[in-house]
Length: 358
Image 1: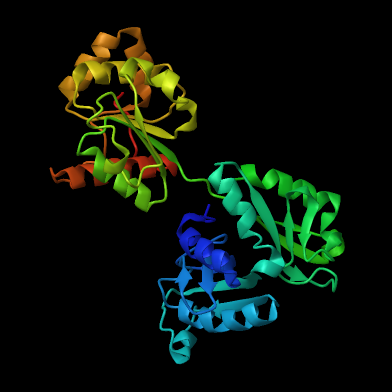
Image 2 (image 1 turned 135 degrees about the vertical axis):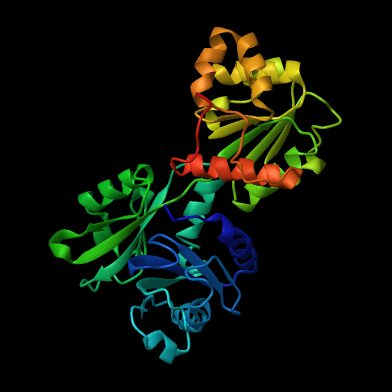
């Protein structure tokens, strides 16, 4: 799923606070080889600044020029770049991706009540599944290109009430759980709506707040993941040490399941460097539903801890990655952090390289 909102947030929040309308670019269709896939978004300020990428930076300048007209008039525009031949060299873009992209530009500003981004941002803040619908084709004058449909039947503009027909509303309600963009057609194929589910970022739990946890938190934050760091040592569990973390928790290892809802996390990494603490962390994680559990340290340390866990160790083993992280080479904290985050990234995206220690 490509509908990732995190990179757009700083620009959106700044421009909304200033009351300045922006243009949102949504990649609605691709053919051949392209940098991004349907659902990817680009936000462009009226002054030319942009956040997000739809290409490797090649199309964004041209889109910025087109975005000015969209912001000024409020009329959405569908832009097509067909790069499957040498014409892009004539245009001066020189992309060479050998693909085609159809990008919808629509205004996001006070008149639109900052939709659809306001709805998606609120869902992201509460980490709740959400989706919005946007009209990408229309033969109905009452349902213009770029018209929006939000949960509860809200439409922008209000006159696009025809979007509230049952099949379209049902498809929008099902979209958050689909995991990918989809399309729904109105009665008689009078319009086509792109259903855009929000890609919620993974939540990562780091159990251990030593100095080597900092680059793990930083790399994860660069991916816009939500990071929680926990430790039982007051000198380590300091929020200012982890400015990119969503939360820093001071808690004893045997109380971690009471201090945090472990079901909220996509992955957990045990890295306290304190054997008794790691044992209690693993005990708590063995009883949780966490599908990815990483453990820092060599295989001998892993086997000692699993042995001490007894039957709980057997329950944990199929989910345990230990030593945690891909074997990328390098011994520095940053290299180890990169290996850890790379393995978790592969796991949450369903890639087969993420292996357990069974």
